[in-house]
Length: 362
Ligand SMILES: Cc1cc2nc3c(=O)[nH]c(=O)nc-3n(C[C@H](O)[C@H](O)[C@H](O)COP(=O)(O)OP(=O)(O)OC[C@H]3O[C@@H](n4cnc5c(N)ncnc54)[C@H](O)[C@@H]3O)c2cc1C
Image (cartoon, rainbow, N blue to C red; front, top):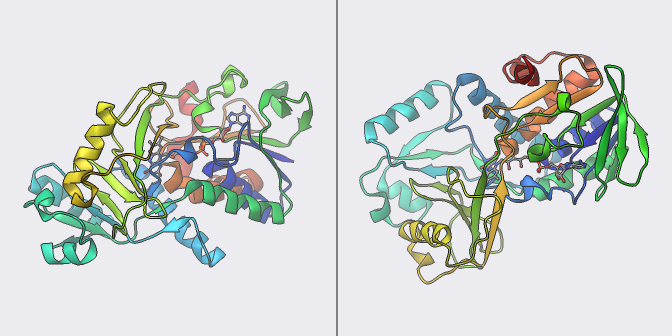
């Protein structure tokens, strides 16, 4: 039996690949499916600012795995393509160098003139762009992470997996250096050949023995949701001060991926962080003038202490594997497939070698 702790995008993707390979799987989540960080994410699928090269390549592998998954399902209601339109607040030459580097790595990126920009996104105010060079990334997209998590777990269940939402793992059971199962909040002991920690921002929690925790450096981000609007936005807009994409039923999701807020802070429509995001969004999309936030959400990023993914076994421990990462929406389909390969086939995937948890225990 393979016990996956956590039913966010990462746990769901892993369970999907394990179950499709014919392995017995149980997925246990303390809350609802996809209800953790996956429910509070900008969820942009991209590899724009993902240095160094190994991390960029991992994110590109995530993008390709998303495409493979869409092809495998045929109908992929969690996926929204359309690409990204981006201009940045850095000097034009520096931005052109950045895009040239991405292109030299094979990343799909092209320049737009003002007419092309207007044709793609007529709601963007040209004055907000000014003379900045504008790039278009046709292979980018965004995901509805909760829909993705449900779809992959439903498929896993059709392949024999068992899913237990609203059931917390309270302890990891060990015999010597081997993990042999978990105990859940109802007092039941579950035996496992391998336990896989997909608990994201909770990967350093007390229920895990110290040697199995992933050190985290979490930060929180703020998301502003508009009411339903008659807008024409069809893709991710990544401007210097605000990032925007549609969020279904005419709503827009407004965020700034590098904005950090206190995870326990209370926000309302008058909070400076909220009014600041809306003001920046109104400059880009004048149709937002007079529109207030309909909902606000704070998401806590699942970030290992050195910012990079932690994927693999823990040192000196058998039967235990972790997958903890930021950019998890981009990475989930690839990490789920690669980790399942390692867990089931004793493979050592070179793409993961830079990102092993052992680096935290040296
Ligand atoms: C503001 C913000 C913006 C982001 N933007 C992007 C982006 O643009 N692109 C991108 O790719 N990524 C983005 N991310 C990151 C991405 O959302 C996360 O990396 C991803 O959602 C993590 O998924 P996960 O499955 O690891 O964690 P989660 O979705 O948090 O799932 C972990 C699950 O573990 C469960 N759990 C924890 N402890 C236990 C226990 N003891 N027993 C049972 N269950 C347990 C929780 O209930 C939870 O459901 C963003 C994140 C934030 C917060």
